[in-house]
Length: 108
Image (cartoon, rainbow, N blue to C red; front, side, top):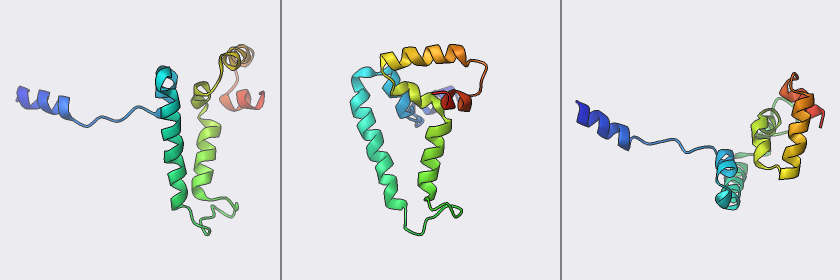
């Protein structure tokens, strides 16, 4: 009963935290995490083919997915900003706090 539950709780596989969280919270590992993240993204190119066009756009499905994620998931931006950029972003946030994320991006 209890022992089996506790054992399975402690040994159950865990999800790894997203790379951008590690970049933000663990500055000493930032370079290695970013390098590993970029290696993993470049591995995705092995799955693209010349005929992998997405809905007549001339762009592959994976390229479209990555572009969409980076465009609309704005939380990754804080992981690559310098301190000066971060201060400017806070000032912009003050000016555009009632706007949606896409308006915030367009105002840059």
